[in-house]
Length: 182
Image (tube, rainbow, N blue to C red; front, side, top):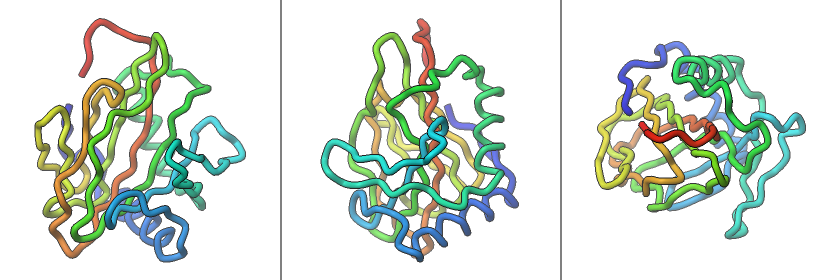
């Protein structure tokens, strides 16, 4: 599900500046070509470093702005994710992608009897770096939100074509299984 203009320009600028600052301070991990991520488990008070399966260490998000949580809470309430699993193997992500960067095709982890949804907020997006979900390309713009079942649909991105970086915030919602999905 694509929701156009979900986040206001002011919040997009705050998120963009924050992620760029983390990148400039070497607080992000190279994930795939010219694509950097840092992560934060919402229910982890210590915000510990997450070690994924393939030995890339995802550095923790730092100095998280209040709008990060405000947007997450709004998504949770707006899309009825209030019954989410609080202890989960999923992490909120801040990402920055530069020219020629991309996200490799993958399916996110799952939890038995739960669905893993991703809500991606685009703090900047110009040309390329567009999400591909189940083979469909979504031409997103700054402020857009895309929600999909990440443990069910294969997803990736097109190659980032713009000289200006693409910044996203990706929130996980692990919720009890339902019969229909977004």
